[in-house]
Amino acid sequence: MTRQTQKLILDIVTYALLILGSVIMLGPFLWMVSTSFKLPADQFTRTLIPPTWTLQNFRDLFAVDINFPLLFFNSAYISILIAIGQLITCAMAAFCFAVVKFRGRNLLFTLLLVTLMIPSQVTLIPNFIIFKWLGLIGTSVPLWLPAFWGGAFGTFLLRQYFLTIPRDLVDAARMDGASLFRIFWDVYMPLSKPALAALAIFTFQGAWNDLLHPLVYMPAVPHTTLTVGLAFFQQQLTLGGKFTVLMAGALISILPLVVVFFLAQKQFIEGIALSGVKR
Amino acid sequence: MDYGTKPLGREKLSLWLMLTPTLIGLAFGVLGSIVATIALSFTHWDLLTPPKWAGLANFIALFNDPKLIKAFTNTFLFSLLYVPSVVVISLLVAVLLNRKIRGVSIFRTIYFLPAVTSAVATALVWNMIYGKDTGILNYIIESFGGKGVCWLCTNNVLLALIIVNVWGAIGEGMIIFLAGLTAVPREYYEAATLDGAGGSQQFFRITLPLVTPSIFFQTLMSTINAFQAYDYIYMLTRRGQGDSSFPVVVYSIYRNAWTFFNYGGASAQAIELAIFIILLMIFYLWLERRYVVYE
Image (cartoon, each protein chain N blue to C red):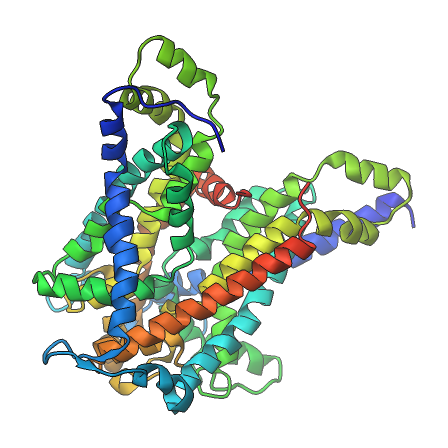
């Protein structure tokens, strides 16, 4: 066998495996889209193309007892607030750890990294008790307020990126008499747009898809997020047998992230690669 | 490490101001909460009546409460299957995508899509796919002459959950491995080809050792995720009264605290979960020292 044919066979096997995998990865999404356009009566038909197309399922989402737009709005503003909180506080902390020399820096940073290993369930119960004591259960405050306390993951991610920015820039800015905050704001922020975008996307995605925290802090429909709402409707609607409406809701709920993903694929992928960089 | 610029004069103030949110989070949000959870785990408390001292009762439950034992066994069983599956499959996908072929970015997008979308939304469609009489999966199996099964019943639910969770995690693993693979210098392969090393030899002698840092990282992350797996399990195995056909530890924590108002017991379980994760991390770091190749 020549090298040429060997390569051809290898290429064919590669494509065959990748295409088979793609069918499995995409299949559930195609099924979701297909079902959301089917008539409720056709919900269990085993064809990918709906026998009869309908938009009724999407209209049903606006019914008063479902109040889907409110869920969508809640998820949106909570996720945006969380992304903003993390961006501001993690960027400031990461700048201090990456650029400024101060006593206790290494100890503090190590401590922060150790907390990455602590599962969030450990801190959930006391936080819940405090927010309950403050009378904030059922509001969105317990969901977004902690985002303004900084975070180990975001700080670590941004610090990694800040360390790649040439140190001469800091020295030059210092020569010009720039203060710490000026260096942070005028040098590091503009140069770190890719990493900041990646962190914004990550935290938004995490918040948008989170189930456990809204389940604990905002458990009652309709004053809750999309994830809790959908989990609730799974039991309600399926009792009434309307998988089609459920799929329409699921489709709408994933749409914003899918759009962001297509627009900012590079940031998504670089962000993950960045978080995997050796410490 | 000794790098960085020193704060001048009053800049010390702005330095600590910039660190304030993180310090508050660290002190109250994390460290304070950990201490509080440990304290709570020695009590019986429903938040309505005053807490009662429980001694070690909540921890002894780990050894004599069949439900809790079940939750921990399920978590271990799930992790044991989930972690290697994610690592092997995402490495395989990354290796395939790293062969310079056409359409890499399209495939990458497709494989990453489940990692972007919420587990809650995709679990809804998986729930349909797994349906016993109406689901498309059994339909496919039957059209190939097989016999459909009840995917979400006790006998098959573990396999069903592994499939969904791995499906959702391949995208991230693939990206980590692609980053690791592209960092392997091309010259290594060129030299190996000149020396007459075949494809499989190159994979096992060059690629695999040089991506051990990525394998290590991905194994670590997958393990942490496996121990905290919740969303798909909640969505696919929920039964009446908040029961589950495959309860895991996080499920048990949630149910104890927010269904049974047993905050002390739930705290003890959270502590136990953290201890298991930390022990595993220590074991991994020991493995890293022995087997991971850093250039």
